[in-house]
Length: 278
Ligand code: GUN
Image 1 (cartoon, rainbow, N blue to C red):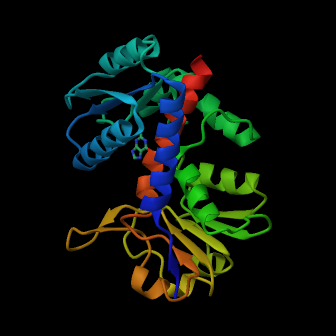
Image 2 (image 1 turned 135 degrees about the horizontal axis):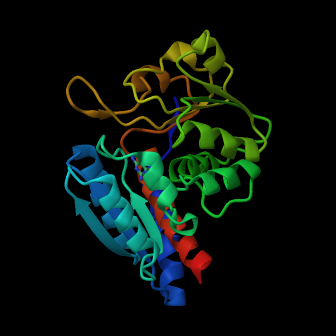
């Protein structure tokens, strides 16, 4: 039987540390959160980010723009936020409506305010291991792995998914800690066999019930980054939890695993941004 990794508890500890530092140093820290359109999932994420700011003593500035916002209007807002000294971090919630090119928006955010670490400058810094910001979800996963007391050095790690937000930076952070890393994706041959090699298996696919027991080695640590809705509209991850849990040594639940960590790491990055700018 696997031990559950408690993302709520680990994330609370991170947020407590951020709050304690802000209070003890009397810092004024601000995060601008921009949401465009009516995506329901995005609305929930943005509300959770605002709540976390309150918990940490970070001032949040919300900009909710209509679905029909043009790219120029959004870029103008980013310019304004780049130049506002009260704003230390800028987060533009993705996805954006189809008339707006996400790459152009990410490129416009000042790299020293890019608390998502999506800007090419920050992605490049992550590649060379000299970073100002860690990408929030992968950094949160690393914290969860550390919370088990596991040393990643020399471990076989398999990441399923090659997105810019999770899969690719996840592989880099594991590599920086001396893991042997494999990235799998939709064209990977014999995915189950590759996954079975993993001492640490990280799934970031976005499909309910994707990771089944035959893909998991006995005693593996299984980290589920998925946030999906099943047939009953219930929140679930990528991992078929009931059949994988008995094989794993540690496993993250959904909800209550990686999700809260992403937001806690965003708070940590916003504080880091404050220091970068002072
Ligand atoms: N949409 C889904 N995850 C994220 C995230 O981590 N940051 C932003 N900006 N948008 C997202």
